[in-house]
Length: 290
Image (tube, rainbow, N blue to C red; front, top):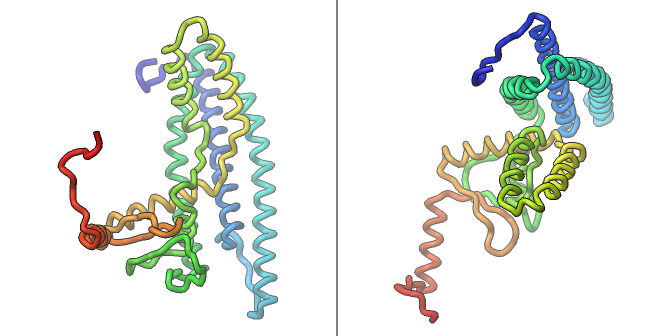
């Protein structure tokens, strides 16, 4: 093995590696399909694969159609979970066979395969998010901040840029909301950083701390659940960053409450200068305290 190039030793090994890669890719696509269907269920959207029509236009008819869509999505998710269980079993057996054939080299091969598949899945999730955007536009209207009847809104938009309801909801969660990440994405860096920190300590206690760190890392892998909504929130945040940059806007904290404010950069600078002038604030040339 040299760099990212893997030397195939035998046709049997190449065959089992391809089986492992294809099985893992199917499993990741199944997870993406589950995430997409759950997002449609949460946002009350009708995916394009659900095709039926209702003649009536009364509230009862719309409720019946909504229940039918929800039932169809639930059935689809159940089928996907059965498929996921089957793929997990196949992947587990293939993983054992690959590890048995390749011995210590398999860890590097698996990392190479995971790196390639992560790039493909990032592209797939980008397409699924775009599909959710199109479905959202078909079912929701633009939500203006002026229509907010809450006496203390979490988000205050002082610009003329109209945001979608989903963007408003994401921003209203506040700057302290922590987005979860898949442990597989950061666990390797966590292991490396932990090992580097342990090596800075006395040799007598390094073995004990390694055992404690290993237990904690295993606990993270088994108990940390990555919510499907977090992928959507991250996608919305990336879109909002583009909107802020293109329109020269910024996000700041409100003065009197915990809300956040969307404001033009020039307007914010003018408010700061006005505050400084009205309160006769001057810059000190040196620290007045001894």
